[in-house]
Amino acid sequence: MRREVASRGFFARDAAEVAPDLLGCTVHGDGVTVRITEVEAYRWDDEASHAFRGPTPANGTMFGPPGHLYVYFTYGMHYCANLVCDREGRGAGVLLRAAEVTGGVERARERRGERVPFRDLARGPARLAQAMGWSRADDGTDMDGRILSPVEPVAVEAGLRVGVRKAADTPWRFWIPGDRYVSDYKRHPKA
Image 1 (cartoon, rainbow, N blue to C red):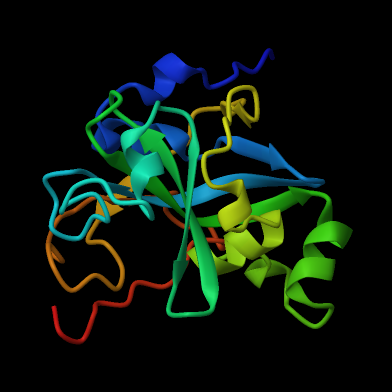
Image 2: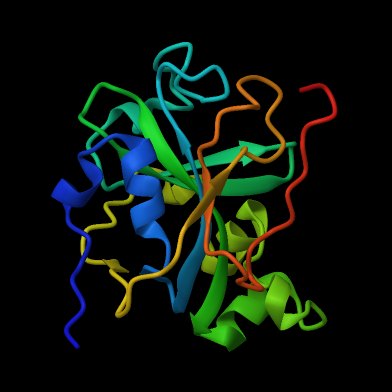
């Protein structure tokens, strides 16, 4: 079966529409391939989004053209990655929360550590970014041609986002039900 490449038009939609369509897609980059198992949508009108207060030097990529990678640094130690969605100037993206490493396992292990269980190589947004080798230097990378749609359709479940304090009850977290590479749900203690 032929697999379609997610094009710029695929991302030029509302983030909450793009997010579930990313489940089961594969992402290629710097010697590692992952199959996406969990994502979260964020938009300019969403208090939990980096785009909520408008463009800044740090979040400017979120307001750029769809289909690019927005990489940010969090908690002073981790990188996380979003795929920019909607139209230019809107400020929207889909956080890549979890994935299964399907290619380049040795490279992912070099980045994540030899003792990390296979299941945890890319299970969680910071782990996923580390396995892929993404950092702020990758912010703004055009992902055109690096994302393939799934061979078979996948089931999708939706629920509350993980670890956000504001807009914690927005059901824009999407995952493949029963998939062992999906992260655990943890509500922010101050939500």
